[in-house]
Length: 198
Image (cartoon, rainbow, N blue to C red; front, side, top):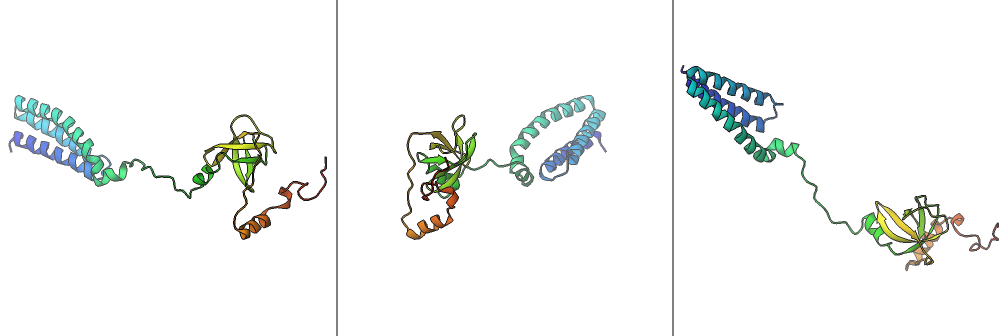
């Protein structure tokens, strides 16, 4: 058999193996076989003649970068490429019933610090405790604070001179449920008719 014909067949085999490597998860074995077939094609081209060998070498040196560019563009759309390459996250609008959306509604409201904010603690707004962090420094318990932002499910608060206002629910059964769930220990002594210990 003519060495030039063997060189051409090996060149075509190398291209076919490289293309198959894009479609089949071979762990690089098809790419290695493609490289081996390309080397054999150069060897037989040189056995045919010096000009045929140099021509085959130049042809491979041009074909490899062209193949790589085409492969990079095509591979993400192959079945394997779609499984391997991560898709960019799709931004979704914030749901109005999400916890952060509910916390956003508290911006501007005034509450009372329940536990010292150093920098994290609890703030009571409208008969409910929320996780909070102070804008800067620390804030002692009992201080009035105003919500200025929401950060990762925490209210960001700052000291204010305003006093908190409790908004009562319109539904009387809901008010009764809130009073029932509220502990007497959370209420001030003067509200319960007790003398202060001070």
